Image (cartoon, rainbow, N blue to C red; front, side):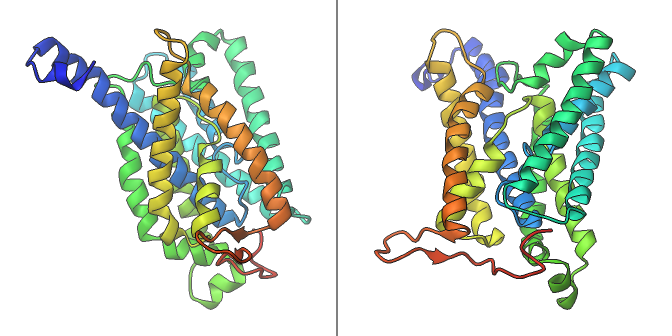
Length: 318
C-alpha cells in the first residue's frame, strides 16, 4: 500500500490502513520503546549491563503467566491473559533479583548467566505443562514474536508502555541512586528496596504488555541500552529518550527486513532480532570485558572517557 493510493479516497484501502497497517506501526514503535526502556531500567538497578528482560527471566515468566491463563481460563480475553502475565512477570523478576542479591561472587557475566538459567527453568516448566495439557499450539503464538496478527482491537495493551515509560522518566534519578548501592541510597535518603522493586515492576509490566500482544522478542532490552550507553554514558535520565528512540527505529528496521527478505512471505521479527542481536551481543560482551564501563566520545581523538557510574565497593553490583 502506497501513500498515493490513500489519497485517492478509496474507503477499502483506508479500512485496511486503519485496521491493520496503522496498528502494526504503533505496536512496533511501542514495542521498541518499551523493551529498550525496560532493559535500561533493569541494567541500571542491577548495575550490570548484561541484565535485561531476556536474561532476567522476565519474558519467560510472562509466557508462564499466559499459559496459566489458558489452562485455568480457556475462554479468557486478552486482558485476562495480560493480568496473569503481569503478575508472573513481576514475581519472576523479583525472585531473580532477590536471588542475585544473595550470591557471594558477582561477576559481570555471572549475573545474567544466573538469569538465563532461571529463565530456562521457567521455560522448561512452561513447556512441560503445555505438552501435558496439549496447549503447545495455543501457546506457540507467544513463544515467537511477530506482528502479523496485530489488528485493531487486539493490540491496545501495548499502549500501557507509554505511561510506564513516562513514569520511568519521572523516577530516573532515583534509579540512578539505587544503582550505586544500598548504602549510598540510604545516605541520600532514598528508600532502596521500594525504588528497586518499583523499578523492576515497571520493567516487568512493560515486558508483559509486549509479550501478550507480540510474543517473545529477545535482545532488544539488552543491546539497545548498551549501544546508547557506549556514546551517552550511564546516566539514565540523559539516555532514556535516546534509548527509546533508537529502540523504536531498531525494531522498525528489523520488521522491514523480515517483510522484504522472502517477499511475499514474512519472517518473524524474533528471527531477525535474534540474528542481529546475537551478533551485537557477542561484540558487546568482548567490548565490556576489554574496556569495562568506558564510553565512546564522538569527535574525540584521545582515549575513551569513563562513564558516570563510579566503581564503588557497595554499588558495583546488587
